[in-house]
Structures are given as structure tokens and as C-alpha cells.
Amino acid sequence: MTNEQVEIRMTKDQMSRTLANIMKGLNEIEIKAKYANEICGIMNALIAVKTVVDNNTLEMECETVEKQKE
Image (cartoon, rainbow, N blue to C red; front, top):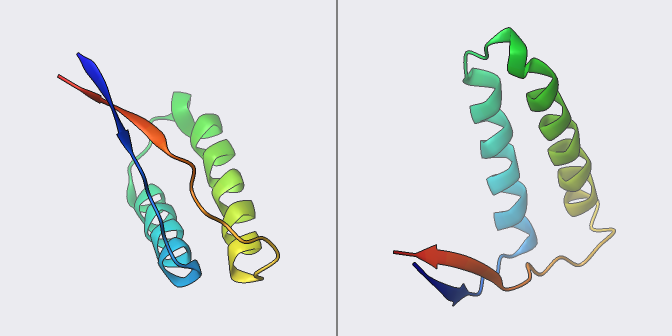
């Protein structure tokens, strides 16, 4: 596998919609009890980030992330 640099840029509205869709998906997943706490933690983090994005209290530009390529 090799690593490939991928740059991700989103507008505030795109970021907000993406976060909302992720949260909607998490709500729709049938979660086994043993993962409930982990999903709850992820959801709380997403809510916090979405609130910051929606309130425009932080200009967000995603950092370059490394994507593994086979």
C-alpha cells in the first residue's frame, strides 16, 4: 500500500450538510448495545462541530489527509 495526499475543501454549507447527513445516518443505524457509548460519543462530537460550523464561529478548512492506496 502507498499513501496518497488528498486535499479536501468544503464551504460552510457543504460542511454543515455533510455533518447533518452523517448524524442522520448514525441515528438510522441499528446499533448493538455494546457500541452505544461509542456512537453516542461520536454523535456528541459531531453535534459540537456542526454547531461551530453553523454558528460560523470558526472558519474551517480541512487539513490535507493521507489516504491509503492499495
